[in-house]
Image: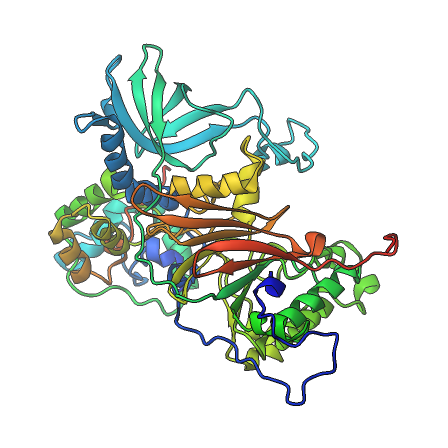
Length: 461
Length: 132
């Protein structure tokens, strides 16, 4: 890609270097504003229960869903609460979905002595044909049946169903709808080519050195130390790098220090210490050249519950002295050069894939945007902070780039909405396994992968 | 909450009785708030006496005692389902959340909460008296 865009008169590599090496100034940052305010936690009180999260989620999304229901099923459609339902009357109900799953890991079952159960090993999917959907509103709940895909939906989604209640107390659904895309933002994107590099899953500290070559190549491309002048001039159009989580590998999460005896582990250092030092050195190289946004991920030294707070700057002493390093939250929302980015490190999408029949990360990403909520399964199966004032995961304005990190492969899609929304959906692959990062062109919202493959020992040239 | 919650937030400290006073309810008007609290939390008297010693430095609440009618109105505000769950947050926080969501909670409640902001019976939700 870079080679195609390079001007043909640029100096190639097969010749002596020019007498005066040209300099390529990086494109200046046109505008940056961090909109992750709602994801930053000031006071952290865990004394509350999670009922507040569901209550504000429903209260916040109810007007949106009622408006959409009236648009779909007619202005005169009756919107009823569950307590006002009458048998046989066709009406619309808005509520939170709960999926009763037999295989869902339940801490109460695990510690129950009478069942004598061995704790269930983590499964890739917890869905079963016997799962049931239950709709809850502020006061009551009712079982749903009919034209609704039980396997696909997950707990915590707010949706509107249209149908009628039967004599035996079930609600037969004829049609249902989600919140659909939020209202669009005005387009302020740049008029010339500008790129943002998205990478995730660097996986440092994994013990194998093969991924390190790819990481170093990535850093060299971005800082303009790779390729001839043509490639360097194109790399100068990269205005930002976003690292979407899992900078450390899962191997650094060893629990040996907890399980083993103290005299065995006294002198050993946690694996993550070495990995964070490596991360600091890599970030130092990047930060001297380009603004970097670092999001924490599942295996990074940050809190477990969503929203994950930024990594602490004392862990990165070398690179945090540079103002180009931005340690940000997960999920992350910001206006980069006029384009609204919203993304996570992938925990929300992988959690939904465990409890739904959807497998494709891009499909799930699109579904979360259509449901109007970044992570509906929090707090049920994904850790979440007990909010009480408002649910910050509700998507109120349609982002222009919506990404999730740590996906198995790279996929991207441009979604067009009915009200003029244009969203680029990107699933950023895990760099440690795929050696692939994504380059997003902010001018026309296109995305392409860039792979740094190195020849392995078994490859023949 | 930034301040650590104490047991005396839910179970207010009873006034220390002198050695010469007989046990039982005092019918004096001056001790009306203590008597009132006795009525609400009479079965927690045992707990109060234990925690009274442990809660060092907790000042006894002064000022005009809140009306039973006011406390009743606040209790009805707690049990109103439209404004969401009432546990774990102060009544003022709940009122402000309802206001932000556009549910228009009644104004007099907020005035009452601000006026008696130092009284634990008013600030936090109504606690069910523990059965004996």
